[in-house]
Image (cartoon, rainbow, N blue to C red; front, side, top):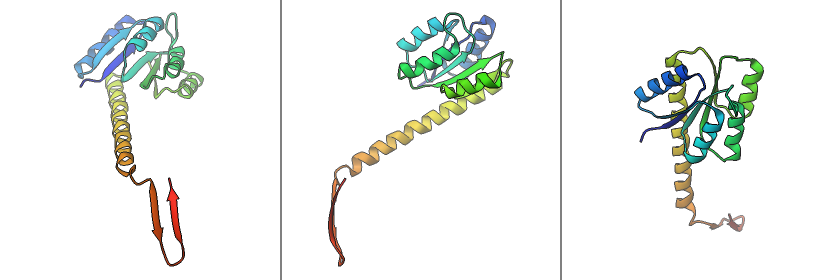
Length: 157
């Protein structure tokens, strides 16, 4: 199954370039040129990763990032900006961004970051699945009864 990515970028040439390189990498890619369109796309679709500009028309990237939590939307967010400051990077990270990159950037860097985040996402999914399986396997043993020369005990979990 292909990973689904949303690119939110108002600079059309950069948006088209990102769509092109990510489709070439085998991803299923959608694009939006402003925050309002992106928000409606987030409501209607589940994306594995969102690559989002900070400065956007209508709803900016940081507001989209805030809406992620309100929507209980579980996805990775990469914020990108041409106006990078330490303060905006800190704010984005506090709001839940997984990465913060400044423009201009190399295509290879974006591909590497996306690949890493999606790999981590896959590992987290497998880990949670494993935890559920272990929990189910040992769920039958709700009560342990034992004894020793010192004491007898019964413990409920």
